Image 1: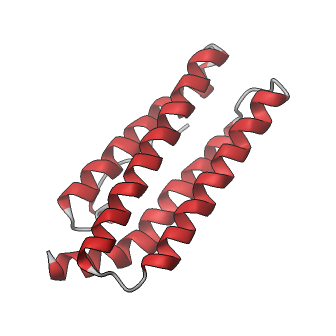
Image 2: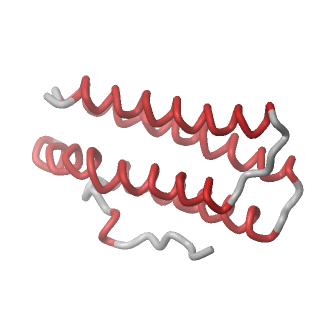
Length: 133
């Protein structure tokens, strides 16, 4: 598995959001390596739990900034947050219920999930916040 590399491509030009994203990328990379190395299921589940919890916190952080600064795309962005969390929790629940390990395909899904959101909705938010903060 290749690591996600933090660089300016993923920067939304808002330091506090970029710091959150860096942490999410670090957790994602830890999870990917754990899956690739065949780490114990409990460890992988703990990493996935942490990634989800940090993502939920981060989304609330972004939503607070959107409300504070009157971001017009708030409702749509929040809906995307909700859908992203719902999809990753569904993946997690399915794997736990069937006692199936997280796979390389799941890691690819999570990579697309994380980078897709940053490169899409978060770039728009970052451009807005860069102007008003």
